[in-house]
Image 1 (cartoon, rainbow, N blue to C red):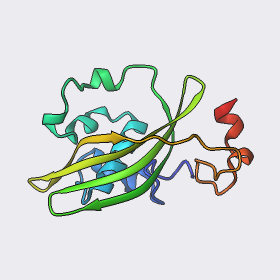
Image 2 (image 1 turned 45 degrees about the vertical axis):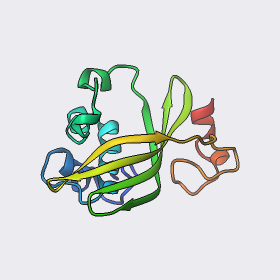
Image 3 (image 1 turned 180 degrees about the vertical axis):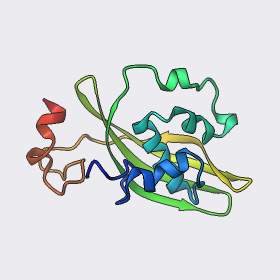
Length: 157
């Protein structure tokens, strides 16, 4: 993915895509758009946006201090596997790849969302298990190359 593209995986620049949500110029129109903008918020360290889009009754002890506590992951790529919505709720299943402490890892989750007063909020998620890519899998960065020919040495040492 080009460094000019938004971290959420769209072909738009960050300023034309998720930044508009982060600075409240627009609101998310679907659970998937909210989830993508939340991923971009992690990448861009927009921690207040993460709090603002997290349903209050599901926040518990979540704070900017907790979200910004080092070490912070190096986010690599987002893969949305499936998303669905009805009138007032939705789910998004995704993989968010990251590199932390010299190790490749992934958050694989089915996230739940709720629509309240015209705004989508993240509520909670169910963590799923998955394997890290093998050498012959498609690369997680989205290049279209095999993992071994692209990012394998960068993220596995």
